[in-house]
Length: 63
Image 1 (cartoon, rainbow, N blue to C red):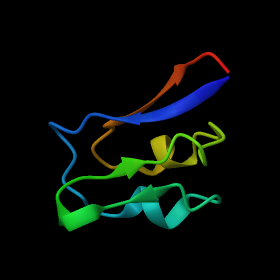
Image 2: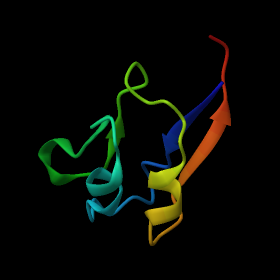
Image 3: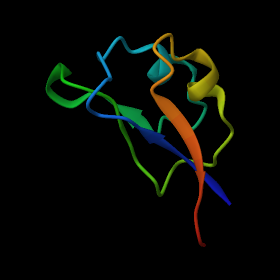
Image 4: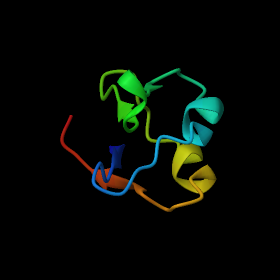
């Protein structure tokens, strides 16, 4: 199973990832950087493809 992960040190909170997430798993609390709710994320990769700064990656995780 894959899950999306954000590099919080580089994210600029542009919101592109949040707009394409079909599960609404991404939020930008306080406008600082994107956060992904791992319980909602299905690892589709749309957010990683859409991120203009390439700060979202898909990582393999255990169930």
